[in-house]
Length: 445
Image (cartoon, rainbow, N blue to C red; front, side, top):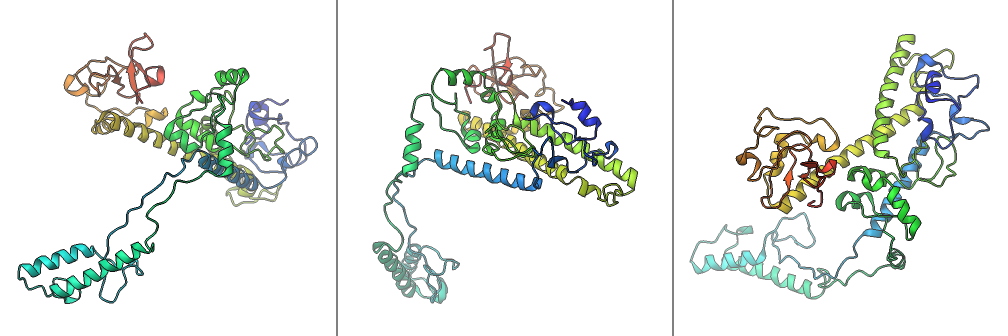
């Protein structure tokens, strides 16, 4: 079996590491082998490998099939976890006015206002002896306005009584047969409903195991998925469900994979982190490939005389791969940002400290919650300086594992908030103040 370095030395920069592949990649010996100094190239490498095990169609078809499969799974999971609608007692807006000839019920674009308000205003003006001409639409006097408004009110009452405005009572939604069966199945102790990516992001991961019994319990303990950050879990969840062919041929494992043969859900892996890493690798290697091509042929549009193709034609599969992982990275970053906003919003709601988000934004740019580089201010009183009760709150929680002064955002709670760790700090570990990302108290969220 070829090593990863041997594969790269042979010019196959677009191949994932051997440990991620179901079947080890072997360097083809066909006449049209890639030229090393061209970087990533697109040949017929995926069309034949020890008997034709590679996928023979276009990569774009795999990506399209993958996206359809994972989207369909999310729709099914959303329906599975969706609360059934409770009984409703709809309320209807009162009668509305319009122009003299218009019908406010048949002309949704006509702007009107409350007919009751119009009637009361006209009656009050009449009682006060005011000149009411031009006070109402159509230059009506008070009597005309009252008659017009009353007509609208009576018409509205009739429409309500005859059900033209809709039902006044909507019964509770009844579960379908499939929903009843699913609810019954997942009521078995030890079974957890599979969550959609949206459920995980908003409510957290609830699955402790894959099923009842000792084996499931053991699998739950060794599975690292539950320990991943919430955004990573959500990203993995929204990319599960595709078991079709990959660039390496049919997927005989039955496991969820992406179009390029990578497991999207595994006991020890983190597909979200892999996606980010892979996007970076592809961006770098493809740029090098462009530079080498232009250095050799003068232009990306130039045709390689050996293969009779331009750079883009030679790299079509790799460009599809680059776009796939870059799009995945973009989606993951969006989930991380949403998770950050959700945590802050929940904290503000729980502790009624609306200024806390402004403090966070002032202290750092929020990127460190995603593992980025902390951006601190130049004001040392809020950036790792000594404890100041006017700044950090009544209780001195000391410095977190980030080396910066913690905050007391909820006096009396016994919990401080890290200056840059985006979470509470505590003495739970016995090692001093510890940020939640390093094992501190997280239950307050």
